Amino acid sequence: MPLFDLPLAELEQYRYPRTPPGDLREFWDTTLAESRAAAGEPVITPAQHRMTALDASDVTFTGFGGEPIKAWWLRPAGWDSSPRPAVVEYLGYGGGRGLVHERLLWAAHGYHYLVVDSRGQGSLWNTGDTADPHGSVPAADGYLTRGVDDPANLYYRRLYTDAALAIDTAAALPGVDPSRVAVVGHSQGGAMALAAAALNPRAACSAARAPFMCGIDRNLEITAAEPYAQLGRYLSVHRDPSVLDVLAYVDCALLTPWIDCPVTVSVALQDITCPPSGIYGAINNLPNPANVIVWPYNGHEAGRAFEDQQWVEWVGEQLGGNGGGPGQA
Image 1 (tube, rainbow, N blue to C red):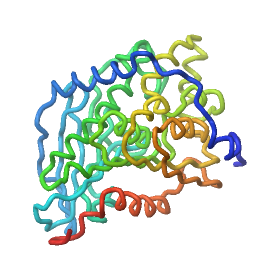
Image 2: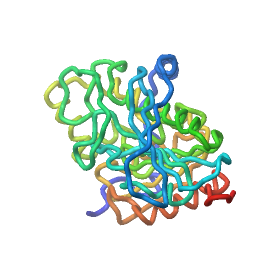
Image 3: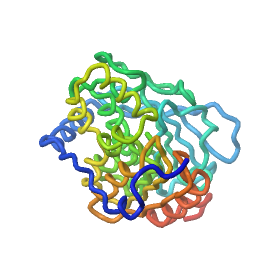
Image 4: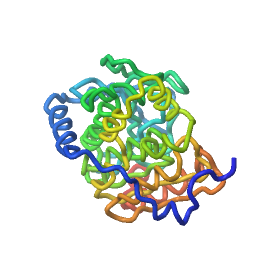
């Protein structure tokens, strides 16, 4: 499709106009403190697979409210116990961690690799194994409007907390160097990678491809594509714009000022799912310049495998190289 958002020169100067809620920092500090207080030790069991180049485990860790979250932990077979870097990956809207052999990129490049399930998801394009044991006031289909009656009830409050605490889990895994944990993701996973880096200073770097939940107000104005269409339908029925004040608590454009680590973000200029100006609203609120990858002719798929290759190089630079093979540094 043709370009539909601001020209690139204007995107690079775009400032998201919404003011953060006055209690945003207190809201998230309290949320994380309560969930960490309820945390337990992760449960790690061998995963059933037939891979020979990789070892894999099924991990259950505690996320929001001490609730169980599933993940896969993959790493090259035959590693010694020397501390090595880790990559935590978060997943796109509607998907779950899937089967253990479905995501191999980072383990194949020598990293400890934690693939985090998304609570209550995993039936749209991939399978999931984690429940979301919370009800909701009336909401549109999907996840974006769940709990919009109050910031404390927001679905994305729970999901972002899971993402932040997954970093703690990865850092504590045997053989992981806790100072070298990267977070990555595409779309909703990209939002989680930004939010996790904002909420947990243990993140050593963050890579977000075409991230969701950036500049929510702006996206509602310029796209009718899913998932933002869910929010539009909700507002067309309830006619209550105050829900945008609630969603501000999980808008990544308002959380990125807290990110202290190196960040790479990609923007696809023909992306109607996660429009460029919303993403630039998040980029331009970062306290330090990001490595920005622009895909002029792509939609929400952005760079896919081409970008994976760039990520592997960039993350390796940030973490001081990958884990290597057995006996290698």
